[in-house]
Every structure is written in C-alpha cells, then in structure tokens.
Length: 221
Image (cartoon, rainbow, N blue to C red):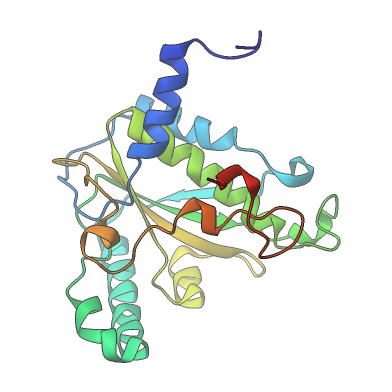
C-alpha cells in the first residue's frame, strides 16, 4: 500500500458506495434535513470539472404545483419513448421510470448560459461541460448512498418545455431531474437488470489494449 492510500476500512467504504449505488425509482416521501442536503450539494460542488469551469447549477423544486408540472412533462415523454421502442413498448410501460411526486427532494441540474466562454479543455470537445456536470451528479449520488438516501436521475423530458417551467435563460440547458430521499430498501441489482431490460456488459468486452477491438491482456486467462 502506498503512503497516499486510505486505510482499508476507508477504501472499503468508498467501493461499497460505488457498488451499492442504485438509480432509484421508489421513494418513501419523508424529508432530507437542510444540513444534510447542503452536505450532499457540497459533495457535488467538489466534482472535477474541465478547466475548473464548474458548469453545474441546481434548482431545488419546492412547490408541489411545479413538481406536478414536471411530472406531466415526464409522463408525456414516457409515452413518446414507449412508441419509439416498438416491440419493447409494453415492457417499457411496465417499468417505473421516475419518482418525481414521491421523493423528498427534487433537484433540476442545469448547464448555465455563457458556457462558450470556457474554452480551456473544450475547444475541440465542447461536450466536456456535460461530462463535468455528470461528475458532480455522481458525487452527489455516492454521497447520498453513503448517507442512506436513494437518488434517481430522470432524463425523460422535453428540455425546452422543462426550461420554460424552470425559467431558464437562453443558452442554459437542463440535463436531469434528480429525485432524492429516503427509500424502503435499495435494489439488490440495478432495477433495469432486475427487470431483465438489459444486462451488465462484462468488463473484458469494454477494455482494449492499444487499438479499438484489441482484447486487453488484463483479462487474459
């Protein structure tokens, strides 16, 4: 073990949060204490970001009427997604895809306007603003799991309609609605895996050496 490594219990806790994190859809209402919510958002705010641009903005939805508006927007997109899935439409409609009305807290994650000014690390890869904000979301997700709270990332919505509900300025872009709060239990496996919607791909199929498609020696027998 090198001098900079955490202790074994600390390392185990980090890996436990990673492996037990779930995209939750079932919530028990309740509440998230303000101090805890601030702590979780601080964890998000310490996510890595390209060029230290910190392209995350969080809008906390506190009004029931606004939640209901967003729920309607998500429900409309759920029906359109089901149509687009064709033969898997019925399977999809049986899935619970969001908990906007059930979760203790609902947060919208928004990329701010004026992002084009940040070119450090983005001149050829402008999508790194989205990648950076996703890191903040993952920090929040892992911290929530460590605190015993569930979180679900909802992306079934028309972003322009949601922008109107949230009063976003031109150029800002919503990338997710995060449901956060107490849950009865965490899924043993990712819900979509439990529901046989998809399977986890073997890691060896995703890691190459030197060239695309060249199997990595890491996984050689």
